[in-house]
Length: 119
Image 1 (cartoon, rainbow, N blue to C red):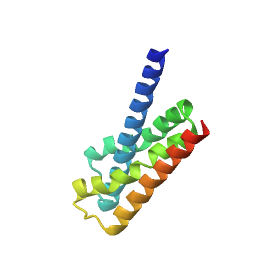
Image 2 (image 1 turned 135 degrees about the vertical axis):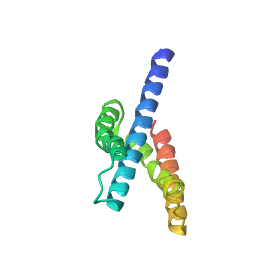
Image 3 (image 1 turned 90 degrees about the vertical axis):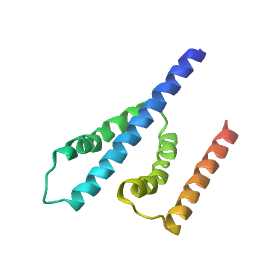
Image 4 (image 1 turned 45 degrees about the vertical axis):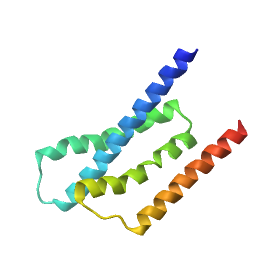
């Protein structure tokens, strides 16, 4: 029984990693294509693939997990976007990013505490 739960945990973790990878790739491709709208570059093709594959991975996640849990976990994505924009595009953090990140983390904590009390 423990092996079953371990396998399910690994599968769900891999699905979420794929989801975040495709989500970030899709967001990077849309940001890049907005900057270079007049040019078609071959290196953008994998990013477009990530953009469209994200929907398929999201459906697979929703098949295995409750919707409310999936959205709570996917909200972590909004914490990584400012970090990736700093690394990739050199954008600076502003107070809105920090306050928004703290609000997201607080919401996830409240969600987990409320979920544990219901069980």
